[in-house]
Length: 218
Image (cartoon, rainbow, N blue to C red; front, side):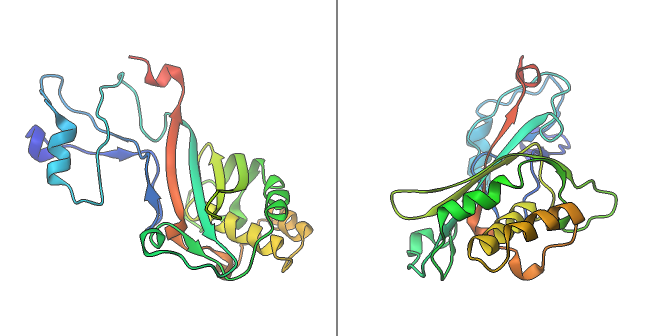
């Protein structure tokens, strides 16, 4: 951006994902002088960026719009292929393999216990000065036609490693290794989930970020 605009540009992202996590709907904002003419900025950027990153759309926003702080909801998915099924080479980068079969009803029964506004300290990696209070709006599991288990997870914001901790804890309960009471006690007591339960990053994708109509009106 600095090369194209010939001015120093600072970019702000909507969600700072963990290393190895994917994003299909990341939002980035930057401020530049009004006099700058972009032309086909998305095309220019895609010509310069690595193939792992594609710019899908560029648009101007109202003064005061902030990719991170104006967001009202962030939607993630986590994909698992369970029962020791073979993950094909084309899916190996965005699917987490799991050796045991998972019961979708048990997964959903555990997930619903976490909905609402809570202090999710038990499911967040500690960061000095960062709040761990979040509103978990949606946490549901579905199995698609190809047999993949997909967790659909949404919140106003997420802490570092929070989604992968939630997935790991819920899977642990669904398999019967821990009880539903254990899950709610972890949430209430803010006792850190063991690192052994944290699921791998590659199964997680930031699908999209939502904003209020006031934040996006031009």
